Length: 470
Image 1 (cartoon, rainbow, N blue to C red):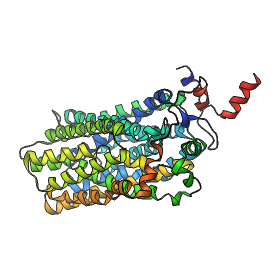
Image 2 (image 1 turned 30 degrees about the vertical axis):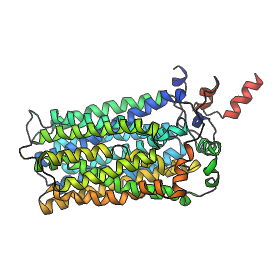
Image 3 (image 1 turned 60 degrees about the vertical axis):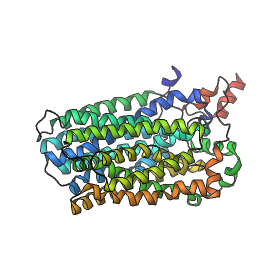
Image 4 (image 1 turned 180 degrees about the horizontal axis):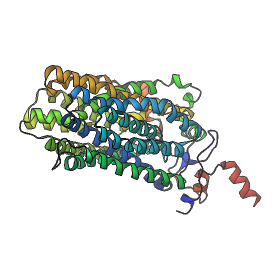
């Protein structure tokens, strides 16, 4: 533990070999636990966002299509963050600095909710949400690949799905808190509860940024990723010399992520609207509670997905889950009362593993391009800024959110091409399975492994030379 809090540095050379990509499961637990806290944070923020959508319709008297500006601001910030300053800091300074930048932006955006509430400005809330989205986009640019590559490659999908399951717990807590604070026993026109909640969030994330500053997490560099791919061997030997544009699985997976995230966000954003309309007599507070229940199904689905991946190839689990997403989404369009609610809750259950598994498979075999490839996949979540407004306009046009659910269904079908490809297109299937037989990180190393993995600015070779001199 003392070594974990030993050094304070915010930069690691991309060609530095730290051996962090060879960490065993035991050695990777501590840094992964700290990074997993970030997943809870953006799950919590995302869960609040879906309920704020309906809350602002009530308090500010805006339409469904206008309230979608929150999702547009939130997810519109993701590609800007990941493809510009977030990606730049990740490539030039490393994971730790990127985590701190993301948390700082998150905190600033949360603080901006206070003046926006005073002015009762929906545009102000959208601006604050954009800053929060910038922070979370920066965090996701670093946290998803870090969880994927920190530890034995064989378990990369399982690690990311477990961390994302913790994120799903945050999406449950968000709506539960909102149903008790935003909708219950408060003046319908009051925004003070929103202001106080986000002030608390700001304080927490600033403290967490300080924790990251004083901690020493293993830094995984481009050189580490290249060596990990070389040690894995097999199908990846032929991939080493490819430029980024030649890794078709990255671009295919990014397209799938764009469509999937857009559909997922659209459904969650108008879940409360859907339930209130198809289940007569349901209040907004009850709708928020149902959303919390649906997010609970989402979390359970992820934990079960991690369990299934222990015994079943992750690409097969993805195919099965995604198939059922499409089935129940199609059924939700014409369903009514409790049947409609059940269908949409099952959609969220089977959505659970899709994002993290698509992400892990899309960056498979990128080697030294892993960080850059991660920014591309995270940038593709801009779909979350595009599909919800389309869904909202359609719902306003038909005055029926249930009928409008055919919009996310179209995007789900388009995203389905990637799960099909990784299972039935032979070259892609072989590429996806390349890490499953890897023994990298599966054997317990010597007592010096942790020191070699530390982000202390020292190369492995330099440490070994110092040991020989002594």
